[in-house]
Image 1: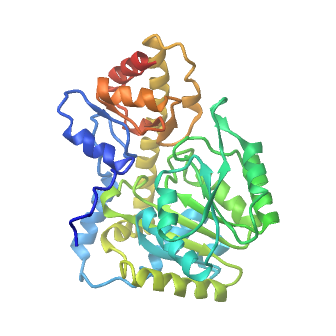
Image 2: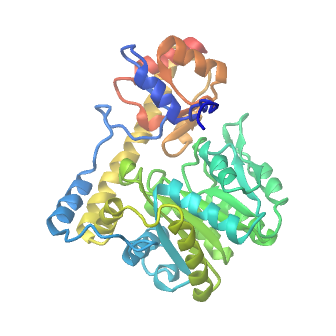
Image 3: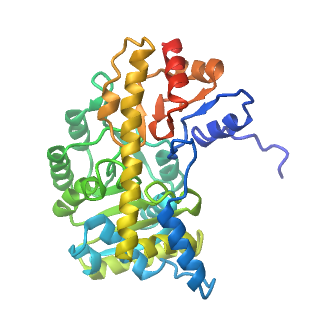
Length: 396
């Protein structure tokens, strides 16, 4: 059976980490995978997460299965984080949530649901987008189109090109949008631009699928949900896929959710019942530990406040690294204007480096970044930022 199986190409992002681990050169730098690093170059466990885990271990009574869609309280707290306390979608019935293995799991559950219940639905993704987005929807058998997003000439959002692309969306098509901290560009719409995007989608009869992987890493928890709330105010139906890998530091716990907003509670319940079938034949029910950590923190006022403080520290550190990186490049004699990096949001930056320059960074300087030129700014430290700037100066 296996004799003719060919070796698959490495993952465009995780494959780089595998190559990085095998690289024997001292001083190597990995800025490919989206993980946060502290000043010591470590991906820390948040102190509030350790406290939540202590409480969980102390009071845990069972290792029994979770419900297919997870604990209802987890779903309520996820919706509260998305929309704010008191919003109709938190407890009003029009929005339902399933606990999934990470944001990727949420995307795949949504894709499987679309494939089963709305066969032939076209999914529109931004150009560029996270490299795994097209693979997830292709695996579910969904046709795809792209809409314009990034303006390379100005290192900003091509809002007119984006809106022109979205004018071509057919009724019932799904449009994937990044809620904040766009991956890979770091470029987000303004509030006024979100209004224009929502208006076009409403006019076209499209359904947004909002990938919310970095809430709190841009401008703040509420501020980063601005686009989502604008969409929700103008459209009756949408999907939201949440990830808690970054903002809770729960990378290896695979904690996320898929939330659906429908026209009525009855319709929302029907959609949830179909989501549960997709989940049952995939992973059956969600892993408990990460979700319990999130519920413990969000459900306790004191822990919630501590989490918000630690999240702000991570956000501020990323912003500081952006400023330091731009200054360090100038100090190393780089003539190109990289000031746009300070204006981008979240973990990633589209550096403008070519594929050839990226390959030279890896081959000549042991610096690993994604082939598109995407750099994980959150992986920079006071120790590696100097050598990184020197390497980029050399390949430029």
